[in-house]
Each structure stands twice: as structure tokens, then as C-alpha cells.
Length: 293
Image (cartoon, rainbow, N blue to C red; front, side):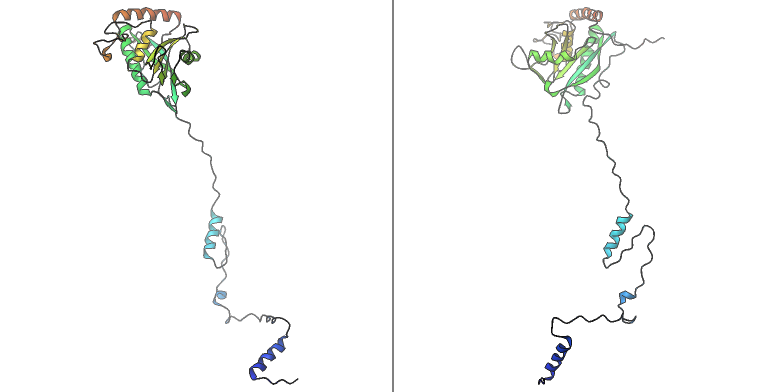
């Protein structure tokens, strides 16, 4: 079949007839590998040296991948050592060792077992306050009957006992802790007046179920001589009208800071001291040995 074609169309038709007319052209078969002169510059670079011990050979165009691989291989595993949390600080630390001790020259020394309400991790009254209460008691009792006091034990009371409102509260406060031989002193947040409205600073309380069980309760609003006043009750003293006496709750021309025990009160306390020691209600603390010289 003869077909008249222009030169361009003749060439195109010849190409189609040569490759066939069913589908796209078949890819050309790869030619032989180019010679050294025809190879790209990258193919002429020397092969990487053999890997040393501990190194990683990484090929490919990404330079950052080589650094990342080396880091992953070289980094040793990190051992995680569990750390135990520090124990909570004792809120009553120092209430025994750092409070005043009985002076060695005192004829008698008695122990105080201290019970302090701890609320939100802190005592209702701190070490300095307790130390001041004890120092004032030692001064007055030492001058009157040659007696001193020192804390021999301390324990924490729960926040639920912060506010002492009723007579039953007073009973329940001391009853589980009572023991003979020492004076039990309880430091609370507030102490209600069970005989009227308002609060009081302290009280010498007898368990209504057994009156031989007794203790002292001191509120956080207590003045500097409150513990001394309540210990006066513990040593048998009632309230008095002596102007000089710290057992006098009425008006007096003598300021509280200068109050002490009246000589007649001192005599009564000496008798009470002897009775309590004889009965075992109080036990004498060991005193330093006298100098041999």
C-alpha cells in the first residue's frame, strides 16, 4: 500500500510501525556499564574504611544519620536508682533535750511528761514558748520550796483534740495517757470555760471517774506564769488573796511579772511534796552526785 506522506509524517509513521501499535513503547534494554571516564564523580570516591570496634558504618546521603547512629550505639544504658523520700521532720524535736533542765543545786527535781497538739504538721505552741513556761516555773518553785522540773517525755496529740470544750473533753484528754510518778502537762489550742462563756488559760484537772488521776492543761493563749499557777494547784494550793501571790486571781498592786508564792503557800507545798513522794504520785529524778572534795 502506497501512502503519500510528507517527510516528517513519514518518519513518525516509521517509528510507530517499528515499535508496534499495541500499548506504550517497551523500555530500552540497559546498556553496558559505562567506562571509568563516563562514571559520575561520586562513584570514583574510595570505599569507606573498615569499621573499628564500637563504630557504626552508615551509608547514604544524610550526614546527620551517621551522627545519630553513633550516639545510639556508643551511649551505655543508664541505671535508674530509686531514691527514698526523706522522712518528715519531727515537729516536737528538741522538746526534751532542748528545754530547761533541773539545776544541779535543786534539792528535788520532778519530771514532766509533755503532750502537745500537732495541727497541720506544727505544734500549737513552739519550743521557745514551752521553754519559757518551764523556766518561769523553775524560778518560782526553786525559790519557794527548792524544787525544779524538767521534761522527760513528749508525744503528739491529734488535731481533733486541739479545742477542749466540755468536762468530758478534759477527762478524755488525759485519761489514756495518765501514769504515776510524773506531772502530765497537755498543751492545746483552746480551752473553754466550762463554768461560763469564753476561754481560760489553763486548768488543773481531776478525772471525774477517778480523782486521784490528775493533770494540767495549758491553752495556747496562756501567759508566761500560767503553767506555774497550775502547778501550784497540783501542789495543793487553792486560789488566794495574798497580793504578792501568783495564785491570786484578783486585782493586786503587784504586777504579774513580779508575783511569786507567799511563804505560807510555800509551807503548804512542802507538805504536799512530801506526801506525793511518799505515795508514789511523784518520783524524784536522779540528782548529780555531790563533789567528793
